[in-house]
Length: 298
Image (cartoon, rainbow, N blue to C red; front, side, top):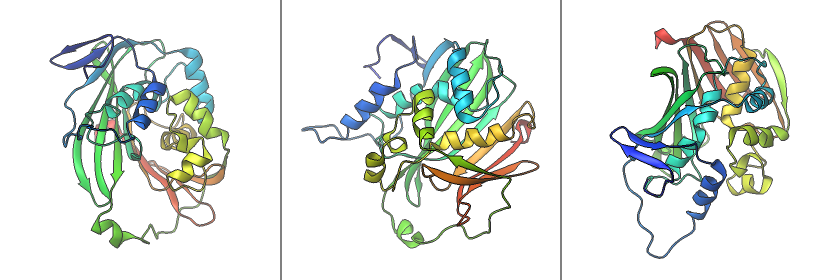
């Protein structure tokens, strides 16, 4: 992490003066894919470094733009997925570092767990921290978790765990080819038309400028017929549909099953207690499956 400007290193990790800009990090990650003479071999372990930025203020205009893109009401309470967006540049910086064992480009976001311990007001300043943990085998490659926390005056008020997969050909992967979820989907609560602009709009408010969400050419290079929606937009849109009916403290788990093509139509379903999902309305295939439970139950 020695290439970080305006930072200090201590026993708890690396503290940055400001949040890094996401755009240059993506560009560096893409450039890093090019073969270089004498390039160092990537490490086999995750870095133990935690990145931290203190006293992050919420930009009200940015918050309002995020609310509109994801379908949340305009209020002074942060949506449950918003701290993920605030901490995303830190996670991006961690995953784009040359010493990170897996290249950023090509990682697939396969699951996300968010715990909101209490409502967070937009006037509160947040200390944001991220670290990478638990590099482990998966039957389709390797996966790991990025753990993000948001704290106010030393109190952790929010925690997010994003699981990323690096696809690598394995025997188990070949055996699973053609398999899938066979269960009939639940009756839809609503049908949502997801326009192409969702990819561009969410990239703008989230800082996640992965071109598979905004470019047909880039999407095809990674095996998609057309751009796909960000997974965290899909989760946010589902939680926005449940807004006002969830407790003050809860955990929302989702598994991203299949990418949502842009443009497209998705079937949203929700049942009390709460389980929810997004499905292909014609074929019944799941895009996202999730559940919410009070935070003290997990």
